[in-house]
Image (cartoon, rainbow, N blue to C red; front, side, top):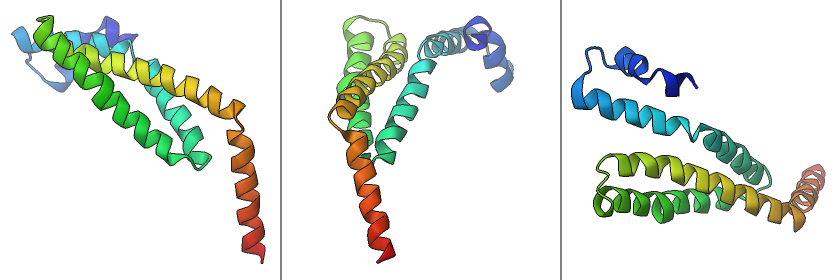
Length: 133
C-alpha cells in the first residue's frame, strides 16, 4: 500500500534527483507492481508445496509459462499493438504474476485431489525405510 501511495518518495530514495519522464515511468511501474505482490507470495508458496512434494518440474514449467506464454506476449501487445510504450511491459509483469498465481493454485488443487500429498508421503516413507536398511 505504501508503494502505491508514495511511489515518488520511494523512487527518490533509490535515485536521488530523479525527475521528468524517468520519475513518471518509475512512479507508474511502482504503482502497477503494487497490484500484484499478493500473487508473488502465492506463487512462491504454492511452488514450495510442489517442490516439497518432489514435483520441482511444476515450478520450472510454471515459470517458463509465466514468462514466455504470458508476460512476453502481453508486453509486446501492450507496447506495440496498443501503443502503451513502457506501460505495456509494466502491466505484463503484474498480469503474468496474477495469471501464474491463479494457474498454480488451480493446478495445486487438482494435484491434491489426485493424491499429490499421499504420493509424496508414501515416497518419503519408502525413502526413510530404505535408509534404515
